[in-house]
Image (spheres, one colour):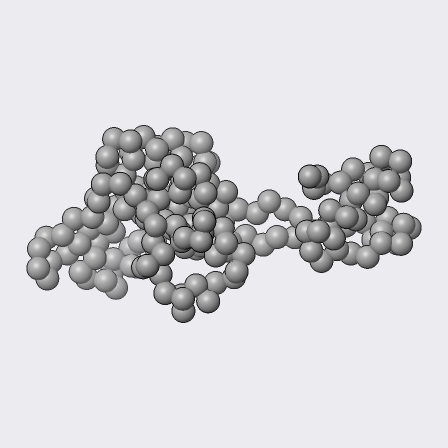
Length: 182
């Protein structure tokens, strides 16, 4: 099973950077993203929302460049309003106070339309810090002949996967090692 990544749209914590031109004016939001195609999405959003203007900044591809840029902006007090980041980074960004707690801004109806796993990646300690926008599929490849040889069924849960790996390790004298270990 893969360690799939999800891009998440998250509100940055700290200093509020959205600007408004006043009553009935245009609100401008800053959005940092390394996702290909973000410019097209932002253009369509801006066309269909005359009172909101999203200003996109392309960030370096890969977590190391993007994350460093976000942390530095947060520390300097000029973090963007919205960012995309990999799901694996949500918890650390939440712990560090970089992401805003958006629990009260996301309806249960919205969350119910998303997969429970994706919602889990966007939450920490029962609070929502992001919304999943791009969840890659998880797949598992297995050797059917090997499983048949040792009388094992294809696992359908992580616990079954772990148990199968441990059983294979024992039955093969350590030649097959479990991918998940405690």
